[in-house]
Image (cartoon, rainbow, N blue to C red):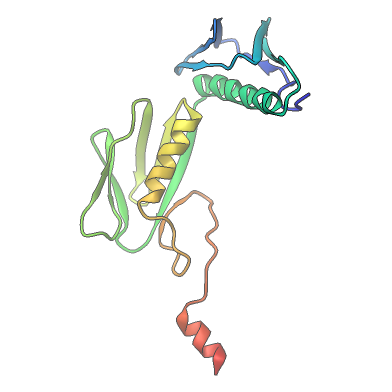
Length: 183
């Protein structure tokens, strides 16, 4: 049995889980999330916890067992606490500023980049060099963070670009360092 899939998921007091057919709905103080589950996985609510069981021991079904346990746990965490990703902007003249619901980025291109977030995602700019992305859907928060990072990923020579908070960018020696060692 899947080690992840067999662990029961605790349901906090302020969260309600409803299963109708193949649709699982999770309501909480921060919002509502829905997902359509696969037929091979059975979901049971036992008091204040959710238990997932699988129909067979096929490799694909075993993988789905752990996957759906993690997805439902993320839905419960999202509607009760929410998810957040932080980005840092490194580089002279690189900055971000809030414009309406979205953000405008100056990243060394000839034009500013305006990014409007999808529904359910909140973007804040606490300082010109940091961006905070929050929402209840973990997948969507990560997707938006990756999209913003893709506008100017960190480069290995000077480290300039947009990176996740705490991300380590492996630096390379430039051309000058390579030719100095050859002498």
